[in-house]
Figure (cartoon, rainbow over the protein chains, first blue to last red):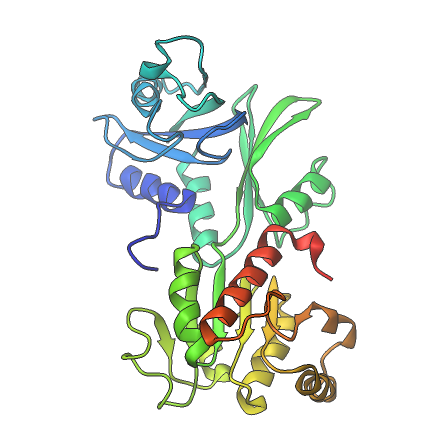
Length: 111
Length: 230
């Protein structure tokens, strides 16, 4: 493939395996439900390590920051959690989807 | 997710095998379903079948609570038989559309790096070139050489492998003769309706570039609306 190739969900899962085998603590975030015009479909992944490095996406960049923060917590507690994002009010620009959609994201430790 | 499950999933992906990770969202347990395994006794068997076809991940409600299915199917591939003028236009367009593309042509005058810069070009007979990367259900095949010596084998192999798209260039007359040859070679005639010939969407394409657009349209239609296949 040429450089136009995007990071596919399978690339992200490979990254998760490589990071884990390199001794990093890793969490995996997955879009599990979408409503309205959500930017990334169910099954999209974001992989996060304990230093806050990440690959992939669960939205168009709108909520990744919040997901990474939650993922650090998940790595700490080793407990999976489900997050929900949507547009509620003006503050949505900070941790929400400007497109007007809603998404549910499952964040789990990879061990 | 446990490393052992993740590693198994990645290994399957590398070998272009489809699989589904089943995550119980209530108790966070997970297991892996391989497409080639016998999962008929699983309560979600029917759901798995549909998901393997659509390639779509999603949440389903079960007696044990909500379950998320992460569907992993191989990225779609397009194998073009013939390093011809149509292919020169089809390669970049198909790559932009997200397909990984292979061009196969044993005629070294056609299969040159100059004509196909950057694409995966195999200057060999399809019989040989397809040995390393066999055709599968996530591969589209477009045979555009016009030459039975080159086109017939990959068409047979594509029908056999249940490729999601199989197209062949040539007029209706040419195609009728082709079907006779394929049947003699042992192809199952009930599968002939899956052959897209004359190749491509019927948009009146005239130039090689326009035919490439028509072919790509057909490939995308077969991928996104498989139920619309005649």
